[in-house]
Length: 344
Ligand code: A3P
Image 1 (cartoon, rainbow, N blue to C red):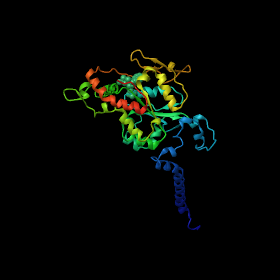
Image 2: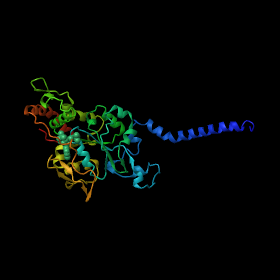
Image 3: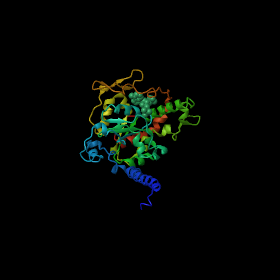
Image 4: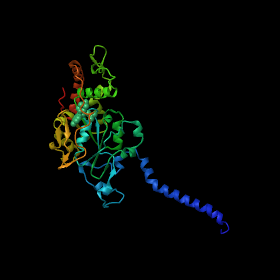
């Protein structure tokens, strides 16, 4: 043995043994990560402790009992800051006032929101990156806070309801809606600006043929406004009690009242009040005064220039065409959500 382990061989064998031990150690350390990746698209409600903050009984129990420190381990709130999957998603609707809703909800101290749209459930490339990637897009939050993101494209994406369901069966979904005729005009303005004005006038864009009497019902500008049909795709996966519809018309005229209903739906204490808003005299939209309990908050002021743009004057016959088309769908929506939005 002594003869076998001469000086030269020791020099070769010892580093090899060291390398082997290093590899084994690393594999063992990385094992939980590998496991996590494997369960990525299983139903996360059962698996991820920090997904399922029960907003209805917002307590910290779920965290203490599952954190690495074990039951009863107390840590300062700062060290509990982490990125968590959302408990609430604003899923739509495009040009329905989704930015205003998100910014106003951020006034509430319990809400932690993503600033940018994440486009996880509607975008194949992003979706393939997995839930771990999605979680990384979320803001850091402490236990008991509500993490929220908004991507209006989810509402009209066929795959989105099932994908969201696979992540969480208990997630709460917010949809802000507005008169679909106004929404279509707002959508057109957005596309018109994107295309630098290279788009026919609204009347021609929205209709077929020279007569301008038949709607192009297949284009997304019109289709998105058939809210009830999109809603029905979500109702295959979620009960209506997990969805809350916000009226943009109400949010702009009486923001505190409309947000109170959202606070109630999320089961968080009432916090947002009339005094948090003032009306911008130019655009006639509410803006956040910025003062909460006498202190100025960062997200104060009005929304950016791209919100509340001027709309073209639309001919009455075209407006009627859109309104007649949407009316029966609107009535069905009112029945589904048990709320009359009073659209023409
Ligand atoms: P317009 O710019 O066409 O008026 P979204 O955020 O989903 O893209 O919706 C944009 C729409 O939000 C705007 O459409 C505007 O009408 C509406 N909106 C609602 N509340 C607003 C607010 N407080 N400030 C600005 N725009 C608001």
